[in-house]
Length: 173
Image (tube, rainbow, N blue to C red; front, top):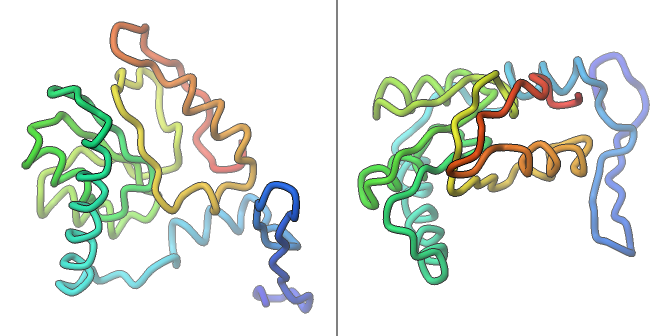
């Protein structure tokens, strides 16, 4: 139950496509407040980092079974504290960037590992650089309009394309 709302939140699953969503859905202000203020514990502990490192190594191994490009520029949307970005940078020598709405986790990656993480929602700003690879792990289930999100991802420039202009800065636009 949400603050001040006596209705219970139910989770609905579409039997045709498998999309799951909360009903009633959060309004834009609730979404912004949730993902910028209270989504996680503020502290990033060592057990969390160890778990994420193992997970990220498995994801990189899986990715490299088909993705053979040696030099890449990767963007991770919803990068949390940046473990996957750190491993891509340090182990693959890739250029990496991230976007994370929860400032304490973004700050951890920025301060501890020197990662380029923008605090906010995707897409964030004018002049987004081109990327070879864009990942968003455990993100799509949090997006109120997945179709619009996929269109924004598709509009992000690839290598050799012009820079994108600002599309939106809130998760609901």
